[in-house]
Image (cartoon, rainbow, N blue to C red):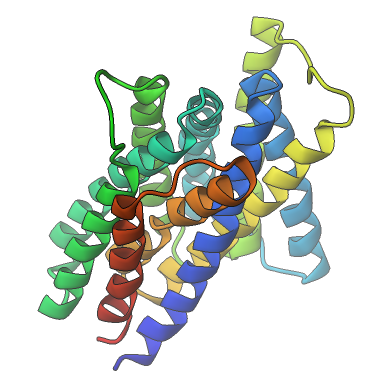
Length: 281
């Protein structure tokens, strides 16, 4: 058992919980408001939280390389999150969330195999089981054509892959500052898109707090993921963190009464069983 794996896995599991919760809340808000506006609010809330945290803890500001990679992560993740919230808001939350997660996670894993070598065979088995878990979570029982929002979910997945890869390149830079810089870039980019599109505001009064809370949760997940990549392998951190749709699906089942079929239950079980295989080597 590798102690660093346990530390990295702890951060990744924390990211599963808060990222999945953020996506549920962001997607729910996007059903009632313009997705770009929701995303801008999300990035603003995350940027403020991480900036305050970095300053309060007197964290060292990243060097030039770390700053550039953090801004690159924000550029990739910014519009990707807008696409993602729009895809979730289309009504197929239980399908589009895992599709984006699978695509966003598979590309960095392949890169990690190339740059860091193959992990232990037991971990590889865990990767396969985790992939199967997400597949069964995402696969609907009756699908006669492409679900609404699937194209947006695919675009979001590509953006998330870029985000994961850029985050890894921040190296040992302060996780708080890296997350703050990423959110600053995302906020500026998405805010500009809101202005250019003349996007409307939130359609229901009092919904702004939901977008801000989604941002606080999302940036907390970013912070945890950065710490996971700093303390362990990229592929391990990505595969574990990519299980966050399980949280989104569970919340959708509890609060929105979305169907939780035996197939999805099998997928959830596979995802849970994958964790010890990935972590305990």
